[in-house]
Length: 319
Ligand code: SER
Image (cartoon, rainbow, N blue to C red):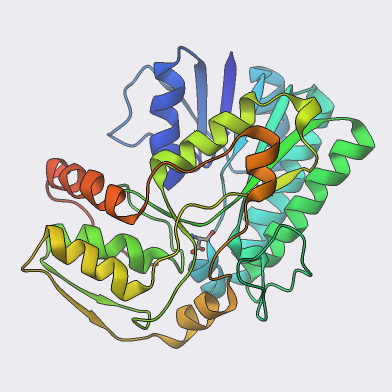
């Protein structure tokens, strides 16, 4: 199968590409950024600016993918620093992608949405369908992206599916999300022996280990269309408090120093998100179930970060 990714150089693309190439698919990875050193030269890596409708159309007309994973986005924290960029990449980029896919006849599209579609005052756990009042430009463009996907599905009969991801945790460098405090407890814990989190210790949002995130995308991409009762699904794994993550990291790295200095913008975003997600619809419709809990993630992730050796930390990473 020919599989095209947008935003392939980001945190999800990093792990998804190897799964797709291992499964024998022809992967066309697109991003503004050049091919990262971590990706083998057999991956067909092409420059694509998703805000450029002409370039998007030309890429789709040339590749004619059977399956598209639309990953390109400016995440919540970076998007609050530059809302215009977030609007252009997330909103116009999704619009350009849907139009190019419609014009060239793409088989199937996977859209990556987020817990950021939600706003304050949510039930706990939060179901798929509640009023969506996001506080960030990122969240607003994800709500709109979900609605556009649903519209193109109904209006043009296109096969579009999506997931609302929790904060994703992996060893790859993140891209300016508000959930990055969780990831940096691991990355800085291994590489620097210390981390000062930008969130309060009692911060609790839905999180997921990347292998489950990749599996969610792959499982949904293979699901029987007739069994899908909605376009975009909540997927959940676990919802620890920040200090519970720190305690788990500390059990694996007893000398680590984790401290807290809540930063108002990112804390405000985190406090507006669900504490936990209800993903019963994904479980019922396509058999979704996360495999990793917090302890299983800690056991798997710390050796992986160690094996990677030196690399980015919260100190070198500008969100
Ligand atoms: N991890 C993302 C963020 O923090 C949420 O989708 O922006």
